[in-house]
Image (cartoon, rainbow over all chains, first blue to last red; front, side, top):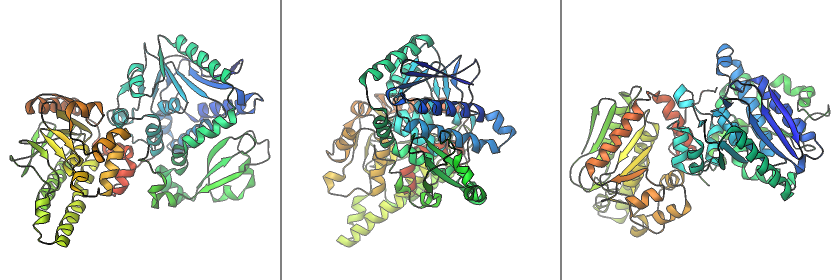
Length: 300
Length: 238
């Protein structure tokens, strides 16, 4: 699924094996648990995370075949990825995506959720495939794209032309920070960058807080869940953003009425050690419907 | 005034005649009805190309018509009427279930530039025609949805300042450099139209689902679309 290695102060998270690394619930859980492990490492606030993969793919997105066989898993995968990305955004250390293969749709979003994107230029592309496979793009994906891609034309090329973005184009568009001649060189480049960042000696907690402030708009949209708001309201589920103030982990969770009342459910945040989740705030989704100004999306 | 033609997959919307193609209540409602027509006839692979005849793409609202009201209040009311009734035209373009391309034959000013920018791709000539937001020179305030369009479609504060605050008349080459248009590599009307037809055909070949396309377009510009009262129909993904 995914492996976690420590090299000095560098955490190397690898999506393992030769497959497409589709973001199904199992892989998402595996990555999340690796991140939790990283957080609980005592030297985590002086470290750097590098995420990479084996094989031809960084990640080819959600497991659509699985979603076809069980539509309820769509919400599960979306929810788990939101949680994971929120967790990455609050992670108390710089993050580097060493993109050594194709990154499509949710896989592209996962790559963009890192502070630095390094990519091989001999092969592979970044691709928002949704238009080509007749899926709409969730608002929180669009929010990440608006945050990470600066030019309106480039955003349009990515979302509305469904361009297969090579490393070279990625550099032009400002999505990719640097490009390399092969997969191995990309990882090497990530390690070099990681070591340089470690040498700078930045306080990871301060860093994580700054990143959260910078990506505030994205976090808001991740938490708002308009895409399934109707279904959620009908089913009586509510969305909670929980933050463990001890280890700083941010998790987004759907809970229905029965689950809310049950204190057990606040223990789901791994790393709590059974203490229970600390409720940060409950998101009232109707507020997001009425007041679009909350997003202030058109500011840059 | 304006015509809608079909050439294979391509819808060609043309502002006809050699005048300034000013947006007046009649033009506004004609354009709106042609956009509605294109929407109702759209299929997979449809693409819209908008162009005009003569020296102007469009020189903005019909200020002479506003002034012909005879009184200050009358003029203000007529301006207000044009600003409000133009909003649905912009909305219709953002809602259109197909890729849209503007082929600028000539000058695009004020609401004429807004009209151009409402398209997904904008091509202009390098030999003729400027982009110009005349409001600052005319002493007219900017409607809220105009400002939102600039924030959404023009990426740098320098480009926005040049257009909105400096009142600069921007030619093709500079427009490309500022990231306002996609291409200005054409030195004739035929050149720019041919280039847009070529792009149109390559987009048409993707045979995209128009409803999905429009939904993705709206999620690309959520602030502006909220102002235009457009909501993206969102189905849960994946």
